[in-house]
Amino acid sequence: MAYPSLTRCLLDAVDRYCNPRSLMYKAGNRWESLSAAEMLRRIAGLSLALAELGVKPGDRVGLFSPNRPEWHIVDFAILGLGAINVPIYFNESPERMAYILNHSGTKVVITAGSEQARRLLACRERLGAVEQVIVAGAPPEIDGEVLRYETLIAAAGDVEVAAYRRHAAEVSAEQLATIIYTSGTTGEPKGVMLTHSNLSSNQTDSFRSHDYSPKDTAISFLPLAHVYERLMGYGYLFHGVTVAYVESMEQVPAALLEVRPTVGAGVPRFFEKLYGGILEKGHKATGWKRHVFEWGLGVAGKAVPWRAYGRPVPLLVKLKWVLADRLVYSKIRAALGGRVRGFISGGAPLARELTEFFWAVDVKIYPGYGLTETSPVVANNVPDANRVGSVGKPIPNVEVRIAEDGEILVRGPCVMRGYYQKPDETQNVLSADGWLRTGDIGHLDEDGFLYVTDRKKDLLKTAAGKFVAPQPIENLLKTSPLVLNAAVVGDKRKFVAALIVPQFASVEAKAREAGLEFASHAELAAHPWVHDLLAQEVKRLTAHLAQYETIKRFALLDQDFTFDNGGLTYTMKLKRRVIEQRYRDTIERLYADLEEPRPLPAEG
Image (cartoon, rainbow, N blue to C red; front, side, top):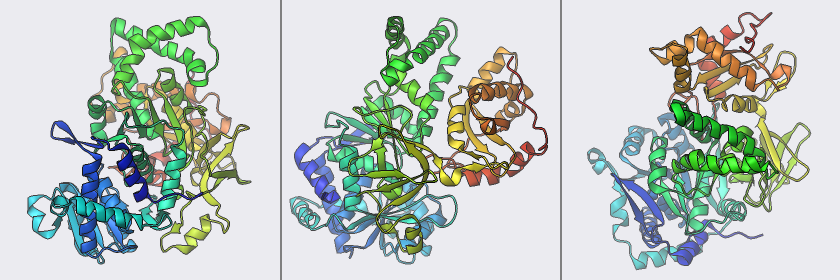
């Protein structure tokens, strides 16, 4: 099947939908918008300016920006010339930024925002191939060192738009569109080469069963430099959906209330924190409100077979759910803006229990699966084919098979061309007949739904030779209202252990009921009463696991894993090697007495 170029998709969407508020962004305390026509005018103006600066088909152009309208405007300005977009995460370190721009041979870098401009120019001398830097919103002190984005787009009009349409029509779907450098935790990052066809095929095939239209408003807060949010952005724009950009995760709660989106995409950590916030707020309530909240949670649990799986439940459960929806669940949805039709989840497996909870309170989440090398979607749940616990069926035109060792193999039009200037690494994962080794472990059920267990490289092998997948265990722990985050360890050890970050507000509330107060998170994490409280939770949540999977010991940490402290990737997945190195002494203490690990206390 032939797929169009990304620029052809955009122009068709602009002509078809003519969205008067295509892009939304926060300016001070107000939300402003750009029409599709104005977006195209700015794209055309910047594209012409890049051509005048000498950017030609095949040249690499860097893009360093948080989520804001300029991201997509710059992206399509680059693509319209047949040039290659090299995106950089808006919080990237100077070392990795310099490596990416130098390795890719980037000719021009475009950045948006004062902070990003300062960070880029701080390592300017290390960027040997970069000839020009263009800045949107340049701070005054660096104005003379860069070209201003605002100046380059100012004079664009009908002539420039017509020229852009001509040049964009010449771009082939088989041309390279982007080089995306993976955010691996070890070794040099690898540049994944994706063509226009890779991305347009994935957008076409993965959005086919999602009924997106100009009536929808999408919230965009995951990094657009990551292929997951980028693909979602293409899907929104190509279906006439209004895109509301949020520059940081801290702004998301307010943006949900202000924008009131109907659709959006998140990663498991986002939904885990959302769930934790719901429980924290409910447990802070007192008296009748606390009683109603806990009753509502109980009703949700009983309604899971009906709400999440479509199975019959007693009529009384349905009647109770209607009342609980009015008293409890509607308030949960109101905190999301009150209009959400459904969220897509990707980046990592979402715990089945978490998916069940959100479906039970009428917040529909559709988990999917993919990776940068597959543009990214391999499989997804959709409204007319959804199975809780799975990541859905493979999308049209994509083949999935399971290798003898359980590794997921993928073939289809979305599979990358290879790793930029790394032929050996490409050959290691991509067979001659097009099958990509994903590095993930999983299985297909009898109906063709795919289940992902864990990353192959993340599997723990105990000293007894048993393989343990840490992610499902971590996901179980994070369903507790007392657990904020968890990292399971135990590779080459006699038993499995864990580093656990308490949900501090919930634990403090429990402690006050027992007459305890803590001066700091560190004091809370070190207190024996808290350890015993969490031990009961660990035992309750993991009672059904095999003996070799059960957590024999754990340590409580006084701070969460975050991007800023190096514990999370840009898509909020655990950086296991970094965490194990940082907490090496803590982990060693968990294994100090190997003969007889202290058992978890019996339930009281």
